[in-house]
Length: 81
Image: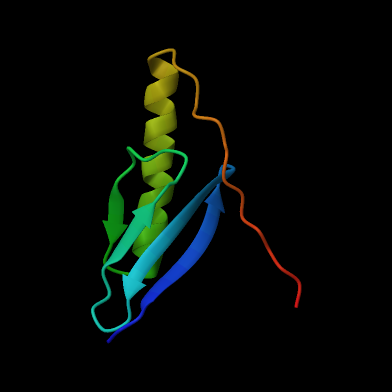
């Protein structure tokens, strides 16, 4: 059984996760504060770039429509060793 790998990132204050399987790397992105953003990538780097672009486009679209950006509810927690 192959374990799911997860990395967490922050862009423009919004937390997002990138999940992938080590044996079949398809990198899917999840923004918990903006669930309508759906993106992925063939590599971790591509998924990260696509996530940043998708967030930029989403926030730009909301601004053009006169709607507020979603509130940031999730934060990246870093634990000291």
